[in-house]
Length: 159
Image (cartoon, rainbow, N blue to C red; front, side, top):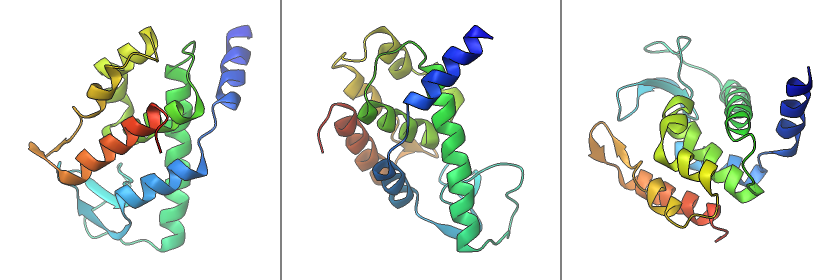
C-alpha cells in the first residue's frame, strides 16, 4: 500500500504542460482517416495506434481529440512511473513524454537516453541521445530531426 501511495504522489507531481500537448499535436498532425506512418504502422488522429485502428477507418475531430487526451495521459503516467526516483523538472518531463509518445514506451524504457536520465538527469550527453531517434521506415525523416532538436532544447531549458 505504501509503494502505491508513493507512486500516486509522484504521478500527481509530474503534470504534462498544455504547451507540450500542443507541440505534440503539431508534430504528429491530425488525420481523420487511418493511414500508415513511415514505419508502416496503421495510425489515426494525432498518432493514435492500436488494434482499434483498421484500414479505411474514419473518425471525427472530436474523436481524434479524445483519443489524443486518453493516449497522452497514459504515456505521461507511464513515463512518470518509469522515472520514479529521478529528479527532473517540468520541461524535462514534457520532453521525455513527447519522445515516448513518438517512439513507444517500451523503446523509451530500453533506450540509452532513459538510462542516462536515471543516472544523472543533468548529463549533457542526453542531448545527443534525443537525435538518435530520427528514423522512420529505415530513413532519416526531416520532421523527426526538427522534433528531436526541439525536445532536446526543451529538456535543457531552451525555448
